[in-house]
Image 1 (cartoon, each protein chain N blue to C red):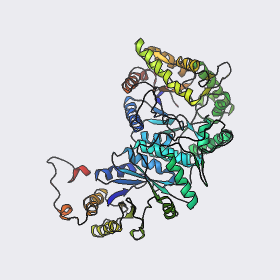
Image 2: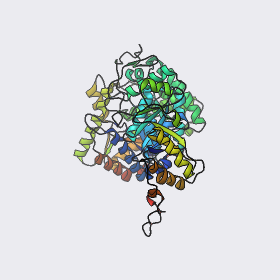
Image 3: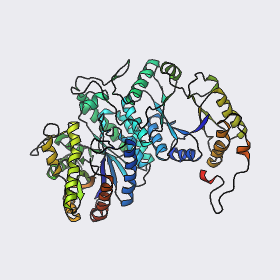
Image 4: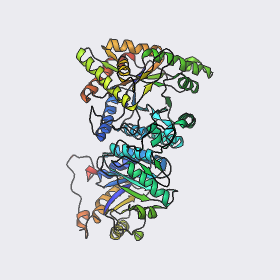
Length: 324
Length: 264
């Protein structure tokens, strides 16, 4: 398996105030620590026009990390493709990929907030055609040596489409394991429908809320930081739609329930327990795990400590078993 | 007058680090491919702590709100050291003025509600039913107000209309008495000729002159020429040249760096 840390949104929140310039500096320092400890990937996240400065431009942020590291990969998880000119985005991505020795992963998603489309002069009605056109441009760039494409999706059709086109998915941390399992099968159906042998499929990825601790009080605090980190999705108006037997999670209208359900996705416990649960993901073909540790309320010493513990006690037991 | 360095494409980090070590006030990034100028500026920014990072941004290639967002990230990465060199590109006066206005409003600390001859922000499109009438581009830049300079074919007209400084390429055409008047020129590596060159720029009223290094120059030699001879020459009237021409102080015994080792 391969391991990363995310999601870096570089925010200054009501609950955890921070200077934005300090957040960007901190991210570079986290990246250096992650590289030293043997992590593979750092993942960024995008939103626009939110009070906390949620990072709206992932490529400059990615470049800032790649410019101070040598081995760590940086992924955009996810960049909202319909809001940008894909030709320009491809050129900028290619340049970063070249400058960094091929360490950029371009994850793209659709976006869902009206304000974000309107602020960029894009009609929300155009988001799917713009997304598909953009993917074509990025696919051509990837074929010519550009950065690998990742997809962010949680519904049947886009997940299957990603499988058909051969793009790995990075599943949201809000998706329970069973939903990841369902969607992984959907992705594999798409992969096979496109005429590819299942054995040749790339490893998929998932963000996971996780906190390695044997201390009940620390566990309680970590779960509360996860709770707090999902309050922002209530503010952003996010809804995780229903898929088959898996229920909708409406962070805007049923905030408390959606957040409480999502907190239950958190992997907590001893190293053995964390490893056991991560092996379940490995078994269904999810072999890139991004620990979702950038939590609202978690102080930096706690995050650093957790990054170190996971590197020391979990990574050595699970890594280097992936070929893709 | 202060001297800065034009960064060659693909070598931004190395050259920016060198410029800072030599005490130059700033660097200019993004003079190559206009699409990747902000990447170049990011690499210059993370390699340095103090220098101003002048970033060439070609207008008309992307929605200005997207560009403003990228510039704000840059300004937070370098903690408020960004200067935007807006290249009017193919835009005419009206389009150039409008796009500059959107960029500056988006980078201000007020919400933006802009309706100009080219851009309407937010767009108010019917399909975006829940979008509000104004938006706030975040994060805000680290500095209070990001400086904008102009270049390109419509720069002079846009500068007249907007009151922004225009990057001069010839000291003879310098016209406005702004407190900041940037310029750019190429040096040759010949001390006498380069001294005359920068002195002429200073006499014309330029305040911040960026120099392009000659192709293939020995970096240690040319940067020493810039920082020891050219920069002091124009930092005060009647510079006493004995200050730059006297014997270089001895190095610390055992120090492997060359004279002026802090510059290596």
